[in-house]
Length: 357
Image 1 (cartoon, rainbow, N blue to C red):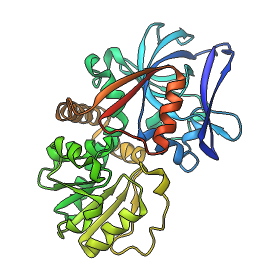
Image 2 (cartoon, one colour):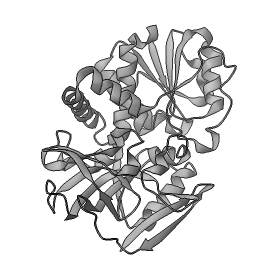
Image 3 (cartoon, helix red, strand yellow):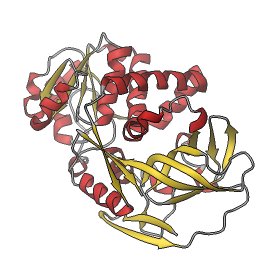
Image 4 (cartoon, rainbow, N blue to C red):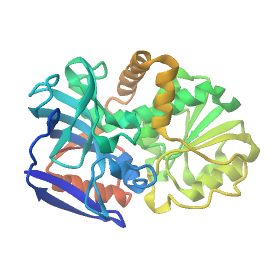
Protein backbone atom coordinates (compact mmCIF):
# COMPACT_ATOMS: atom_id res chain seq x y z
CA UNK A 1 0.00 0.00 0.00
CA UNK A 2 1.33 3.41 -1.00
CA UNK A 3 0.98 6.15 1.63
CA UNK A 4 1.72 9.82 0.92
CA UNK A 5 1.53 13.15 2.76
CA UNK A 6 -0.36 15.71 0.66
CA UNK A 7 -0.12 19.44 1.41
CA UNK A 8 -2.73 21.92 0.31
CA UNK A 9 -0.77 24.45 -1.76
CA UNK A 10 -2.98 27.35 -0.68
CA UNK A 11 -2.59 26.41 2.99
CA UNK A 12 0.66 24.56 3.63
CA UNK A 13 -0.25 23.89 7.25
CA UNK A 14 -3.08 21.64 6.02
CA UNK A 15 -1.44 18.25 5.48
CA UNK A 16 -3.20 14.92 5.17
CA UNK A 17 -2.13 11.32 4.67
CA UNK A 18 -3.69 9.38 1.80
CA UNK A 19 -3.43 5.74 0.78
CA UNK A 20 -3.58 4.12 -2.64
CA UNK A 21 -2.98 0.73 -4.19
CA UNK A 22 0.46 0.22 -5.71
CA UNK A 23 0.33 0.21 -9.54
CA UNK A 24 2.04 -2.43 -11.64
CA UNK A 25 5.73 -1.61 -12.12
CA UNK A 26 6.52 -0.32 -15.62
CA UNK A 27 9.13 -1.85 -17.92
CA UNK A 28 12.59 -0.52 -17.10
CA UNK A 29 11.42 0.88 -13.75
CA UNK A 30 12.55 0.24 -10.19
CA UNK A 31 10.38 0.40 -7.08
CA UNK A 32 11.96 1.98 -4.01
CA UNK A 33 10.74 1.45 -0.45
CA UNK A 34 11.60 4.61 1.46
CA UNK A 35 13.65 3.73 4.51
CA UNK A 36 14.32 7.14 6.06
CA UNK A 37 14.49 10.86 5.33
CA UNK A 38 15.19 14.06 7.22
CA UNK A 39 12.83 16.98 7.75
CA UNK A 40 14.59 20.35 7.87
CA UNK A 41 13.96 24.01 7.09
CA UNK A 42 15.12 23.15 3.58
CA UNK A 43 11.85 21.27 3.07
CA UNK A 44 9.93 24.35 4.16
CA UNK A 45 11.75 26.26 1.43
CA UNK A 46 10.79 23.60 -1.13
CA UNK A 47 7.13 24.06 -0.21
CA UNK A 48 7.26 27.86 0.02
CA UNK A 49 8.86 28.06 -3.43
CA UNK A 50 7.13 24.99 -4.84
CA UNK A 51 5.50 26.76 -7.77
CA UNK A 52 8.26 29.28 -8.48
CA UNK A 53 10.97 26.61 -8.80
CA UNK A 54 8.71 23.67 -9.75
CA UNK A 55 9.50 21.65 -6.65
CA UNK A 56 5.92 20.38 -6.70
CA UNK A 57 6.53 18.82 -10.13
CA UNK A 58 8.91 16.09 -9.00
CA UNK A 59 6.23 13.99 -7.33
CA UNK A 60 2.81 14.57 -8.93
CA UNK A 61 -0.22 15.07 -6.69
CA UNK A 62 -3.94 15.86 -7.22
CA UNK A 63 -4.86 19.37 -8.34
CA UNK A 64 -4.37 21.92 -5.58
CA UNK A 65 -2.09 19.62 -3.56
CA UNK A 66 1.62 18.92 -3.48
CA UNK A 67 4.09 16.40 -2.10
CA UNK A 68 7.14 17.93 -0.43
CA UNK A 69 10.48 16.51 -1.62
CA UNK A 70 12.81 15.10 1.01
CA UNK A 71 16.37 13.74 1.01
CA UNK A 72 16.93 10.25 2.30
CA UNK A 73 17.62 6.56 1.84
CA UNK A 74 15.61 3.81 0.17
CA UNK A 75 16.08 0.24 -0.92
CA UNK A 76 15.09 -1.52 -4.12
CA UNK A 77 12.19 -3.92 -3.50
CA UNK A 78 11.29 -4.62 -7.15
CA UNK A 79 13.22 -4.10 -10.37
CA UNK A 80 12.44 -4.33 -14.06
CA UNK A 81 15.76 -2.68 -14.88
CA UNK A 82 18.57 -5.19 -15.61
CA UNK A 83 21.24 -2.86 -14.21
CA UNK A 84 19.66 -2.40 -10.77
CA UNK A 85 19.26 -5.33 -8.37
CA UNK A 86 16.66 -5.93 -5.71
CA UNK A 87 18.17 -5.22 -2.30
CA UNK A 88 20.35 -2.28 -3.35
CA UNK A 89 20.26 0.84 -1.19
CA UNK A 90 20.23 4.33 -2.67
CA UNK A 91 20.32 7.94 -1.49
CA UNK A 92 18.54 10.83 -3.17
CA UNK A 93 15.42 12.94 -3.67
CA UNK A 94 12.33 11.24 -2.27
CA UNK A 95 8.68 12.13 -1.65
CA UNK A 96 7.16 12.39 1.81
CA UNK A 97 5.73 8.91 1.27
CA UNK A 98 6.44 5.20 1.69
CA UNK A 99 7.38 4.29 -1.92
CA UNK A 100 8.65 5.75 -5.18
CA UNK A 101 8.96 4.33 -8.70
CA UNK A 102 11.93 5.56 -10.78
CA UNK A 103 13.19 4.79 -14.29
CA UNK A 104 16.98 4.49 -14.06
CA UNK A 105 19.15 5.88 -16.85
CA UNK A 106 22.84 6.81 -17.15
CA UNK A 107 23.52 3.94 -14.76
CA UNK A 108 27.05 3.74 -13.35
CA UNK A 109 28.50 1.83 -10.40
CA UNK A 110 28.01 4.90 -8.18
CA UNK A 111 24.56 6.03 -9.25
CA UNK A 112 21.82 6.61 -11.80
CA UNK A 113 19.42 9.28 -13.03
CA UNK A 114 15.64 9.02 -12.90
CA UNK A 115 14.59 9.48 -16.53
CA UNK A 116 10.84 9.65 -15.84
CA UNK A 117 9.42 12.13 -18.35
CA UNK A 118 7.74 14.46 -15.88
CA UNK A 119 11.06 15.09 -14.08
CA UNK A 120 13.14 16.10 -17.08
CA UNK A 121 12.14 19.81 -17.24
CA UNK A 122 13.60 20.34 -13.75
CA UNK A 123 17.25 20.59 -12.71
CA UNK A 124 19.11 17.29 -13.29
CA UNK A 125 20.74 17.68 -9.87
CA UNK A 126 17.53 16.51 -8.21
CA UNK A 127 17.13 13.47 -10.46
CA UNK A 128 20.37 11.75 -9.46
CA UNK A 129 20.45 8.81 -7.05
CA UNK A 130 23.60 7.50 -5.38
CA UNK A 131 24.12 3.74 -5.15
CA UNK A 132 25.53 3.45 -1.66
CA UNK A 133 27.78 0.46 -2.35
CA UNK A 134 30.06 2.70 -4.48
CA UNK A 135 29.20 6.22 -3.36
CA UNK A 136 32.23 8.34 -2.30
CA UNK A 137 30.10 10.47 0.04
CA UNK A 138 28.61 7.50 1.88
CA UNK A 139 29.73 6.87 5.44
CA UNK A 140 27.67 4.08 7.06
CA UNK A 141 28.22 5.60 10.51
CA UNK A 142 26.96 9.04 9.40
CA UNK A 143 23.86 8.23 7.36
CA UNK A 144 21.58 10.26 9.59
CA UNK A 145 23.89 13.28 9.47
CA UNK A 146 24.02 13.05 5.68
CA UNK A 147 20.24 13.21 5.47
CA UNK A 148 20.04 16.15 7.85
CA UNK A 149 22.97 18.11 6.45
CA UNK A 150 23.58 16.71 2.95
CA UNK A 151 21.51 18.94 0.63
CA UNK A 152 21.93 21.93 2.91
CA UNK A 153 25.67 21.36 3.03
CA UNK A 154 25.92 21.27 -0.75
CA UNK A 155 24.14 24.61 -0.97
CA UNK A 156 26.67 26.05 1.50
CA UNK A 157 29.53 24.52 -0.49
CA UNK A 158 28.24 26.00 -3.74
CA UNK A 159 27.81 29.46 -2.20
CA UNK A 160 31.43 29.43 -1.03
CA UNK A 161 32.60 28.21 -4.45
CA UNK A 162 30.65 30.99 -6.17
CA UNK A 163 31.94 33.68 -3.81
CA UNK A 164 35.53 32.48 -4.11
CA UNK A 165 35.35 32.49 -7.93
CA UNK A 166 34.23 36.11 -7.61
CA UNK A 167 37.06 36.85 -5.14
CA UNK A 168 34.33 37.47 -2.58
CA UNK A 169 33.56 40.71 -4.42
CA UNK A 170 36.44 42.31 -2.55
CA UNK A 171 34.81 41.68 0.86
CA UNK A 172 36.68 41.27 4.14
CA UNK A 173 33.76 39.58 5.90
CA UNK A 174 30.71 37.48 5.09
CA UNK A 175 27.54 38.03 7.12
CA UNK A 176 25.26 35.00 7.50
CA UNK A 177 21.71 35.46 8.75
CA UNK A 178 19.92 32.59 10.47
CA UNK A 179 23.41 31.55 11.54
CA UNK A 180 22.08 28.56 13.51
CA UNK A 181 20.54 27.03 10.37
CA UNK A 182 22.22 23.99 8.93
CA UNK A 183 22.90 25.67 5.59
CA UNK A 184 24.55 28.63 7.28
CA UNK A 185 26.67 26.31 9.44
CA UNK A 186 27.67 24.48 6.27
CA UNK A 187 28.77 27.66 4.52
CA UNK A 188 30.65 28.77 7.63
CA UNK A 189 32.54 25.48 7.74
CA UNK A 190 33.46 25.49 4.05
CA UNK A 191 34.55 29.14 4.22
CA UNK A 192 36.59 28.42 7.33
CA UNK A 193 38.65 25.83 5.46
CA UNK A 194 38.65 27.17 1.89
CA UNK A 195 38.49 30.95 2.41
CA UNK A 196 40.03 31.56 5.86
CA UNK A 197 40.97 35.14 4.94
CA UNK A 198 37.28 36.17 4.98
CA UNK A 199 35.85 36.76 8.47
CA UNK A 200 32.61 34.89 9.22
CA UNK A 201 29.94 36.87 11.08
CA UNK A 202 26.84 35.01 12.25
CA UNK A 203 23.52 36.79 12.85
CA UNK A 204 20.93 34.95 14.90
CA UNK A 205 18.20 35.43 17.47
CA UNK A 206 19.28 36.34 20.99
CA UNK A 207 18.16 32.91 22.22
CA UNK A 208 20.50 31.14 19.77
CA UNK A 209 23.64 33.20 20.32
CA UNK A 210 25.17 30.72 22.79
CA UNK A 211 24.50 27.73 20.53
CA UNK A 212 25.90 29.43 17.43
CA UNK A 213 28.97 30.58 19.35
CA UNK A 214 29.54 27.06 20.69
CA UNK A 215 29.97 25.65 17.18
CA UNK A 216 33.24 27.55 16.77
CA UNK A 217 32.48 28.14 13.10
CA UNK A 218 32.09 31.92 13.33
CA UNK A 219 34.60 34.63 14.12
CA UNK A 220 31.82 36.65 15.73
CA UNK A 221 28.14 36.08 16.56
CA UNK A 222 25.70 39.02 16.76
CA UNK A 223 22.02 39.04 17.72
CA UNK A 224 19.51 40.49 15.28
CA UNK A 225 18.67 43.36 17.59
CA UNK A 226 22.29 44.54 17.62
CA UNK A 227 22.99 44.63 13.88
CA UNK A 228 24.44 48.10 14.36
CA UNK A 229 27.46 46.33 15.92
CA UNK A 230 28.45 44.89 12.52
CA UNK A 231 31.92 46.08 11.57
CA UNK A 232 31.69 48.62 8.74
CA UNK A 233 34.16 46.97 6.38
CA UNK A 234 33.67 45.69 2.80
CA UNK A 235 31.16 42.86 3.18
CA UNK A 236 28.96 40.33 1.46
CA UNK A 237 25.76 39.10 3.06
CA UNK A 238 24.12 35.71 2.67
CA UNK A 239 20.53 35.84 3.83
CA UNK A 240 19.11 32.46 4.86
CA UNK A 241 16.35 33.90 7.03
CA UNK A 242 14.20 35.55 4.39
CA UNK A 243 13.27 38.27 6.88
CA UNK A 244 12.80 41.55 5.03
CA UNK A 245 13.37 43.66 8.16
CA UNK A 246 16.70 41.98 8.93
CA UNK A 247 17.84 42.33 5.32
CA UNK A 248 16.93 46.02 5.28
CA UNK A 249 18.81 46.58 8.54
CA UNK A 250 21.97 45.02 7.06
CA UNK A 251 21.73 47.11 3.90
CA UNK A 252 20.98 50.29 5.81
CA UNK A 253 23.87 49.78 8.23
CA UNK A 254 26.51 48.91 5.62
CA UNK A 255 25.20 50.85 2.61
CA UNK A 256 27.89 50.97 -0.10
CA UNK A 257 30.16 48.83 2.08
CA UNK A 258 27.94 45.89 1.20
CA UNK A 259 29.48 44.55 -2.01
CA UNK A 260 27.04 41.70 -2.70
CA UNK A 261 23.69 40.63 -1.21
CA UNK A 262 22.77 36.97 -1.66
CA UNK A 263 19.32 35.51 -0.93
CA UNK A 264 19.05 31.80 -0.07
CA UNK A 265 15.91 29.95 1.01
CA UNK A 266 13.50 31.15 3.66
CA UNK A 267 13.71 29.81 7.22
CA UNK A 268 11.32 32.49 8.57
CA UNK A 269 8.30 31.76 6.39
CA UNK A 270 6.07 34.34 8.02
CA UNK A 271 8.53 37.09 7.14
CA UNK A 272 9.98 35.78 3.90
CA UNK A 273 8.08 38.27 1.80
CA UNK A 274 8.84 41.96 1.80
CA UNK A 275 10.04 44.57 -0.60
CA UNK A 276 13.72 44.34 -1.54
CA UNK A 277 13.48 47.34 -3.86
CA UNK A 278 15.03 50.66 -2.85
CA UNK A 279 17.45 49.07 -0.41
CA UNK A 280 20.73 50.93 0.12
CA UNK A 281 23.66 49.14 -1.52
CA UNK A 282 23.50 46.33 -4.06
CA UNK A 283 20.27 44.75 -5.26
CA UNK A 284 19.76 41.35 -3.56
CA UNK A 285 20.36 38.38 -5.88
CA UNK A 286 18.64 35.01 -5.50
CA UNK A 287 20.96 32.00 -5.26
CA UNK A 288 19.61 28.90 -6.99
CA UNK A 289 21.93 26.04 -6.01
CA UNK A 290 21.17 23.63 -8.91
CA UNK A 291 22.35 26.18 -11.48
CA UNK A 292 25.60 26.66 -9.59
CA UNK A 293 26.03 22.88 -9.27
CA UNK A 294 25.79 22.51 -13.04
CA UNK A 295 28.32 25.35 -13.44
CA UNK A 296 30.72 23.66 -11.01
CA UNK A 297 30.45 20.32 -12.83
CA UNK A 298 31.22 22.05 -16.12
CA UNK A 299 34.17 23.92 -14.60
CA UNK A 300 36.02 21.06 -12.88
CA UNK A 301 34.19 17.95 -14.08
CA UNK A 302 31.78 15.71 -12.16
CA UNK A 303 34.52 13.53 -10.63
CA UNK A 304 36.54 16.44 -9.23
CA UNK A 305 33.39 18.25 -8.05
CA UNK A 306 32.22 15.13 -6.23
CA UNK A 307 35.65 14.71 -4.63
CA UNK A 308 35.74 18.33 -3.45
CA UNK A 309 32.22 18.10 -2.03
CA UNK A 310 32.95 14.80 -0.28
CA UNK A 311 36.16 16.14 1.29
CA UNK A 312 34.44 19.30 2.52
CA UNK A 313 31.48 17.31 3.78
CA UNK A 314 33.72 15.08 5.90
CA UNK A 315 35.45 18.18 7.35
CA UNK A 316 32.06 19.73 8.08
CA UNK A 317 30.83 16.64 9.91
CA UNK A 318 34.01 16.72 11.97
CA UNK A 319 33.51 20.43 12.69
CA UNK A 320 29.95 19.89 13.88
CA UNK A 321 30.38 16.57 15.68
CA UNK A 322 28.27 16.62 18.82
CA UNK A 323 26.54 19.93 18.09
CA UNK A 324 23.36 18.36 16.68
CA UNK A 325 21.46 15.51 18.28
CA UNK A 326 19.78 13.08 15.88
CA UNK A 327 16.19 12.37 16.83
CA UNK A 328 14.43 9.49 15.04
CA UNK A 329 10.66 9.36 14.69
CA UNK A 330 8.54 6.65 13.11
CA UNK A 331 5.67 6.98 10.67
CA UNK A 332 4.39 9.47 8.10
CA UNK A 333 2.21 11.00 10.79
CA UNK A 334 5.41 12.12 12.53
CA UNK A 335 6.75 13.53 9.26
CA UNK A 336 3.57 15.52 8.74
CA UNK A 337 3.58 16.87 12.28
CA UNK A 338 7.26 17.87 12.21
CA UNK A 339 6.84 19.66 8.89
CA UNK A 340 3.89 21.67 10.18
CA UNK A 341 5.89 22.59 13.31
CA UNK A 342 8.78 23.80 11.17
CA UNK A 343 6.41 25.70 8.94
CA UNK A 344 5.41 27.68 12.02
CA UNK A 345 9.02 28.43 12.89
CA UNK A 346 9.43 25.79 15.61
CA UNK A 347 12.92 24.63 14.66
CA UNK A 348 15.39 23.58 17.34
CA UNK A 349 18.85 24.04 15.75
CA UNK A 350 20.32 21.49 18.14
CA UNK A 351 18.12 18.65 16.84
CA UNK A 352 18.16 16.86 13.50
CA UNK A 353 14.90 15.03 12.76
CA UNK A 354 15.02 11.71 10.88
CA UNK A 355 11.77 10.03 9.88
CA UNK A 356 11.41 6.28 9.30
CA UNK A 357 8.09 6.04 7.41
